[in-house]
Image (cartoon, rainbow, N blue to C red; front, side, top):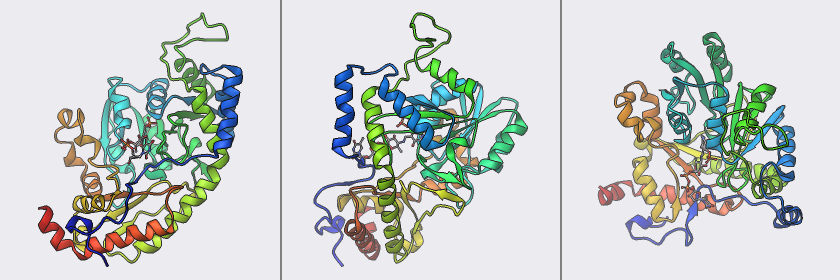
Amino acid sequence: MKTPAILGGESAFREPLHVGKPNLPEKKTLCNYLDRIFNSRWLTNNGPLVIEFREKLEEFLQVKYCIPICNGTIALELAERALCFEDEVILPSFTFVATPHSLQWQRIRPVFADVGNDDVNVDPASIKTLLSSRTKGIIGVHVYGYPCDYSKINKIASESNVKVLYDAAHAFGCEVDGIPYAQLGDASIFSFHATKFFHSFEGGAIATNDEALAEEVRLMSNFGFAGGVLDQVDYLGINGKMTEISAAMGLAMLDSVEEIREKNRQNFELYKEVFAEIEGANLIEPPSSMTKQNWQYVVARMDENRFGLSRDMTVQALRAENIFARRYFYPGCHRMHPYRELYPSASNILPNTERLSEQVISFPTGQVINEEVISRIADCLCDISDNADQIRHKVE
Ligand code: T4K
């Protein structure tokens, strides 16, 4: 047992330990793709590497059409437009702020639904209570890669005659009930941001089995230009294209993706083992319906009464140890600008979101994390819990 750094002890780690430290592919593999860029001098605008990446993604995600996009947020905006979302769209508040921002940016009103009790995902019953004649779409978010209740959400949507978009930013390579996530709704988006389990520096994709929708998204992402000769504009579009350098990283990462998935799985198992011994740090585990996971987020739900310290003080104490754990996702989006001003009483109908967002802590995983690091993180948590009263006294 050591004195927690917040009480004057030495920090457990010399270098800061970050959630989201990027995974990397083999340097040689990436360099081979870079050589191709140098040889072709084709840097962007649907070049050969983007085309190859698109084909490999369609195969990997088991979906008919997958359009690489410059990032996950623009992928959301394009998909929302192509699905004719307008007026009001229902989505969870417990998500990264990019999800509601993508709507608000297009002057679509995000209507926040609550998560289920003891769940990180949106509660279909909450969606139902928010439906109105103004509802023009539903966005389900697979938070931490865990599947939302797709069959109930899809049923609500079809009964209400609206489309469903799944924000699968966290869920690359996941399956539920044997179904790849890309097949769950009218369309899904993925994020390939550097901090994701699988990435392309920055990047994202829209996946769908709907040919017309895919074509629309393709046009929109390239200013609406149709055909090979770039003089005919058939659509109101923007620039959502992925660059060749991003496709190079994505292609190189695809070669390492199963290895990284396995590393994440091992890390998760180790966390599970050590957290089982820490009172009040409850690891959120994947549901049994998940047939494939990426283990990208290691998140504990802290029980203040049993652990002895609030979540925020725990995060502060971990920082003193050089462990930069994150509060994904705090606060709920309804408490962020501009939503807190637009919907000042939203928290009244989001009790589960309020509670959950006060309890979660994300811990680091990925290639740079190993058994020794995980065991030291666990030791720090135990020391923090054992010294909870003193820490509270010091911080308050
Ligand atoms: N939908 C959902 C549900 C999402 O979670 C996201 C993004 C999106 C949509 C939108 O997708 P994108 O448009 O981003 O493709 C990070 C990511 O930037 C963001 O992609 C992600 N979700 C979100 C959950 O996490 P921040 O604001 O927490 O990033 P930041 O800069 O604090 O970095 C996170 C940690 O990673 C830090 O501890 C440092 C470390 N890091 C980061 C980078 C970029 C590194 O060690 N190296 C790096 O190169 O949003």
